[in-house]
Length: 74
Image 1 (tube, one colour):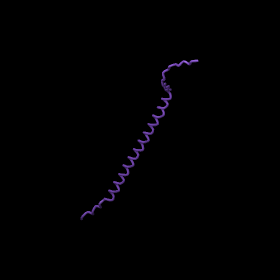
Image 2 (cartoon, rainbow, N blue to C red; image 1 turned 120 degrees about the horizontal axis):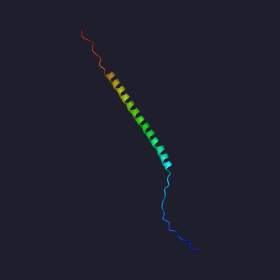
Image 3 (tube, rainbow, N blue to C red; image 1 turned 180 degrees about the horizontal axis):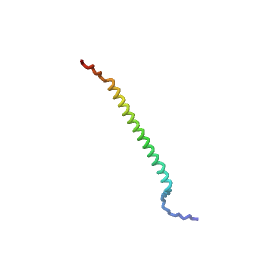
Image 4 (cartoon, rainbow, N blue to C red; image 1 turned 135 degrees about the horizontal axis):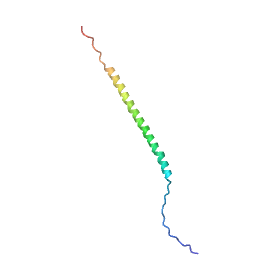
């Protein structure tokens, strides 16, 4: 008995479900936005803290450098 050989071209078929793509995007995009907001808030807070620290250091330096006013001459 001879088995016939059927010549079928090999092709790769990728079947995707549109809902899974929407679900993936629906998860990762808001997650990336949330991470971006958190990073932005941390950077803003550090800048404000550094600005306040610099202002306090300036005030302390000005207080140390303050020259007393001599009394008025009569």
